[in-house]
Image (cartoon, rainbow, N blue to C red; front, side, top):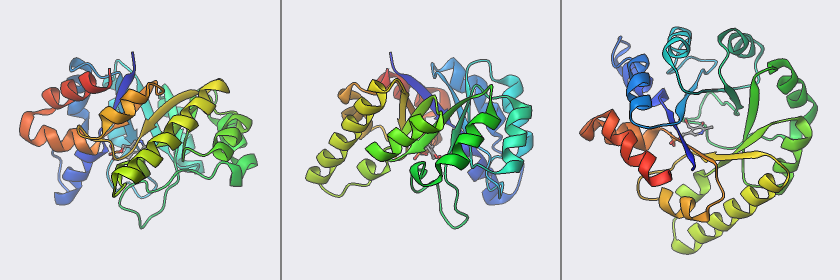
Length: 235
Ligand code: PXP
């Protein structure tokens, strides 16, 4: 059965709109777990634009399931990750001007650096957020990553059925290649209640990490119901 990781950054983004104390992403942890998600995902960005250190430490304290911390390969954030001890660290690229994480990590282009980062994060399991491209997948294996999370953004943003099919095939090929190499294969970014089914039908992913669509639906249905519906779709 595939796993659902719920990204709670988007709750902190709403809080940030007013620079206040609510909604508190820490309050989401128990609800997400009760609703049947496999775990929680959050991203501690260098600019702290949504999740901050206080959130991360409290999320760690109350999370009884599985915590996946997204981070850039920066000294400060690696130090915090080692202190906090999530079950998984996902290395992502981080650009200050982007609205969200726009592209995958160029593992092939920074192999030796990332190899060191994976080693520094030991004993935490480390995943690489990459495009579904063979070169990046091979490089992720070489760098010592345990897992890859394939970026579904290009599929999600496809403007036509033909383009969607092309992107689905890329994802399927990428996931199969990664799995054959022995990597654990997750995916995420831009997945919604409407577009996730086609990805699930590929039958190649062990995990789906989804945030924006779930938190958007939660505005109308409540978080527990929103997570339950998504868990049913991916499970
Ligand atoms: N996976 C990674 C690595 C991400 O950076 C994000 C974006 O926060 C997601 C999954 C979830 O993307 P979305 O919020 O579009 O569902």
